[in-house]
Image (cartoon, rainbow, N blue to C red; front, side):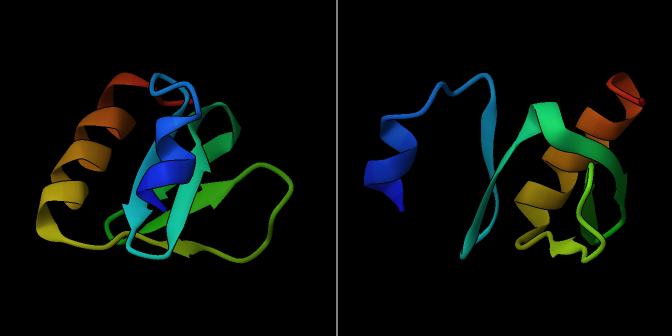
Length: 64
């Protein structure tokens, strides 16, 4: 996963769980432990507490 992420633009892609990296341009909204993407009905889990904090801050500054 780290290799793939190193090749993607870091301002657009974020790891939200050990198994998931998402494009922030497609986030519709964030709940406490889930990320919802535009056009996708299933939620993507948010992993560790550190990531929760990052996405909580993202949600407060980037509400769509």
